[in-house]
Image (cartoon, rainbow, N blue to C red; front, top):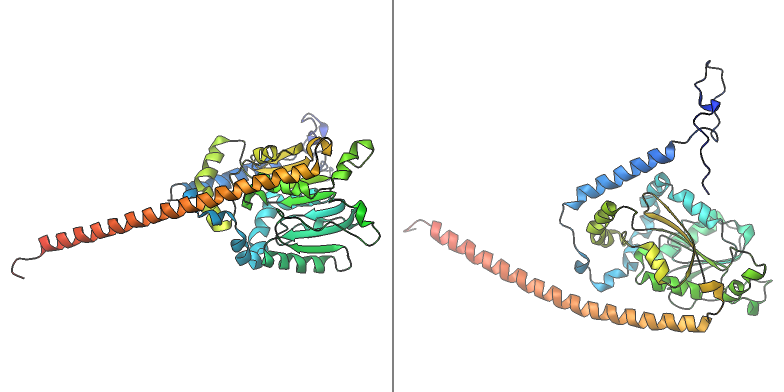
Length: 363
């Protein structure tokens, strides 16, 4: 919980009478930095969006259904991705939020959609039995692998998985642990992943399938509270309708350029997943979300196999919808191209007629 600032009537806030008088401590002084940074952040975001809002932006219909999977974009930008976002994340405090989130991880840990490994330096390895880093972008995963080996050269219990978190993943194992006792991961980390994932609620359901359901079921009998949890750091819709309006107007263009839908309702995505929302915190005008999720009723009364089967059925429906959307998109693009060519032919005919009218007689 945030600490309340001390009363402004405190003598610690009186102006020092001499230059030798001690200054108020950082803990005692009321901090104006968060308010100032929030105001600056809001003005900066508003200014950038205001400049873009009146330009013609493609709608979501301008994106082919396959563009909802942004792996190709991330493959192309993996080498410069950290350089592009380092300064922005530090300025907005995202780096600090990453550290705080990741330091809660313990036991057998899976980081899904690890990207370039922006969280690697924050893990407290003394709390971790094993670590699995997964991503479906080969180039991103190679950057994460190189970064991890440079930061933690002596840690032997980290493995890298190239593939989709929607698919089954290997169980965590460690030399001194008995594999039959391991039925999944104790902690799953995912940061800035829901914005670029097709079917984000199904993505969360898939992550839940990788959790240790046995650990969740015995938690209330003296187990550790932070085990069998999904920890998320995401960005999406704001508290404010005016900012959501700007996000919506520019969402498709931003997604097409950066592979990120920044107007998704993270809270609704979590609720739609069917998982238990343990805690939610929001920052930066409500656009930054920090969530802790658990299994429904901590795994009690819910069969893991049934959960996985329901998730697979929902995936089949999603794939059918995407396939149909692709057919409709191709037909729409064909009609638009046909209309464009007719308009070009008509304009060429009009130009020719004007030239004939203006042409001097007898020439």
